[in-house]
Image (cartoon, rainbow, N blue to C red; front, top):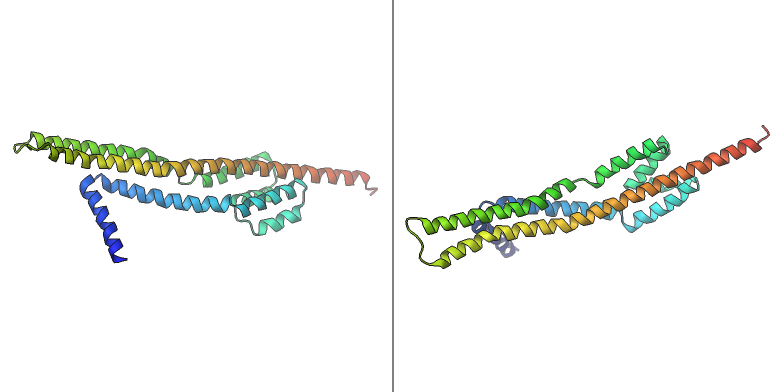
Length: 221
């Protein structure tokens, strides 16, 4: 275990030594990226997992039929955005204004940290290029200095080390990009499901109103 940790920190030290100071923000961005990817993955597995979608399907069916008691039973164990929106529509009414506000609130939760991930995708390659440019400038300064290098391999080694930051920046961006696109797709699908939930709730309200009107007409009292 100690050997593995020593190797890990040794590799980190080598990256910092060869890539220069620009590697520090790149390493920090990579840590932030991995942390956000794990957090968002856990979030979306809970929101769009099988159990959640099965409960949502049952809830849509119950809402369309106006079975308020069945919906309330389903909501007891539901801590997902779908459950929060359904509860809000039942408590505050299924009007368009309430529905729009509920969806906007959940959309903000869906898009949490997405701006941060987008910034990492954009900034990482730029930081990598900056590190490479700085490294190349330093290599050419060695060529033009008072004690000019005669072996071109020394300069080539410096340029190769400078290119390390570009490679690392691209890796960080790519590692962040693909989960980012998956999370965007999950968010879009979740919003579509919320809109279906709202339509089911409004349809259920209409059915309840029809029954109420029918009973009122047929009731001799």
